[in-house]
Amino acid sequence: MNKHLLPALLLGLSLGGCAEARIAMPGDLIAATEQLELTGMGGWQGGRFHLGSSAGEFDWHGRQTRVFDSFVRNAGSGSFEVTGPEFGGTLTGRCGFEERELDLGVAVLPDERLSYQCRFDRAGKPVDGALFLAEVPRGSGLFAGRSRAGELRMGDFTLDIRPIHHAAGGGLPTSVPLGYAFSSGGRQLGALDLNGTNKTVYAPRQPGSERNAVLLASLALSIFQDPGE
Image 1 (tube, rainbow, N blue to C red):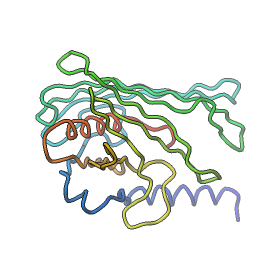
Image 2 (image 1 turned 180 degrees about the vertical axis):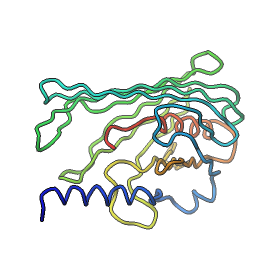
Image 3 (image 1 turned 90 degrees about the horizontal axis):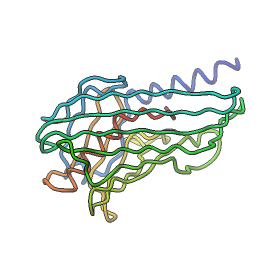
Image 4 (image 1 turned 135 degrees about the vertical axis):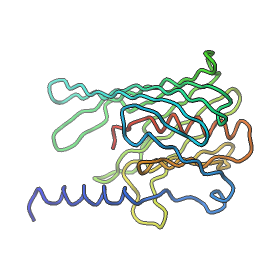
């Protein structure tokens, strides 16, 4: 086989799968949550977006620096501002990430694992809390890929964030997350489907800290343009 053909085939399969795949979710969770479409964040560097009855603006800037063609630093920053009933007024977020890699030509190894953080303001005042996401080990070998996990802290409430690599209907797991599952105290509360032009947020129906945290985490994770992709 042509040595250039296999990578092209794998890339085609990957892109083709991403066009249709949706995250695997428990049926009872789908029934228990409200599905909100997040439009306007389909890979753009900035612009306007809508989530439910709320609307806002976002921007994202990423960059890569190489030293001697071997040491690679990926970094980026972004922000969003959203206003509407889902957020009880106006809320802003400021986010950034950084990772360092060692490019050996035949493989790229992590030197300093990815970390992503967001902090928030409401009506111009800092919110007591932040979102933290980091690269976590996920298997080994050629197709091990990268994964991320973290948490959102809002006062005394903590929302655990775990990656979803499987699509609905089965099949092989994706190399980077298709979305994220949100839980607290071992109970899954909602999820975020990142795949496709529009994102889908599965949020708790009842108002309160759980719903607020899921909506906020979903926005913060949606503006993040993962270098692993």
